[in-house]
Image (cartoon, rainbow, N blue to C red; front, top):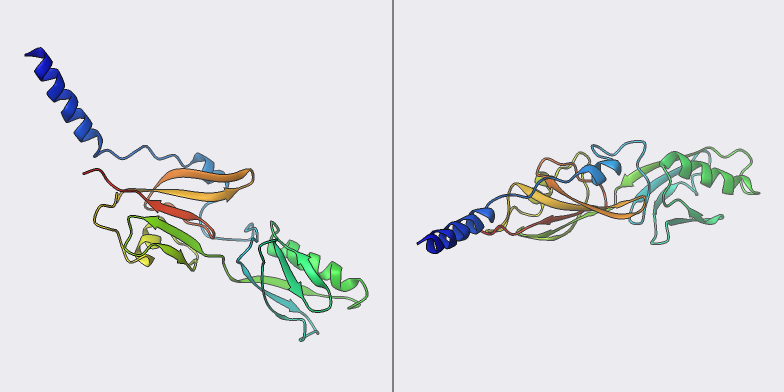
Length: 190
């Protein structure tokens, strides 16, 4: 009898264990930055930048950061902006223009469009979507047309690029999403 009771207790514990959500693990993600995208945002491939060169309308335009982290501008060619802020990118463009092209360049760089985020797993329409400032995991799911029928609705896994490489964590649905993040909605057991 003890053996039968032990087996049924083990089976019940395993069945109920599938209903539990894993503990949130956000510490590594928090180190990469959370909340709305601000002045500390670093540029990367896929970002669209509005570069304004005052007094030089032919150089002012929208440029996309390529896979190597560069923008290609007339006259000065490729300017490396990957991993820099918009202020640092403006200074890099000014330095290139100052080398024989414009006497006293004044440049402003602003983000015209953030790189997209990705959502995978148990959502209706997984894929790549444009980033919206202030986005959370919950709004990312809404953009992907909602949860799938077997989705775990109380947590997700977010992966983002950190200073030392990719960083992942289990996060609540209210956790902020950043440009370039990959959000995975896991399947629930029951």
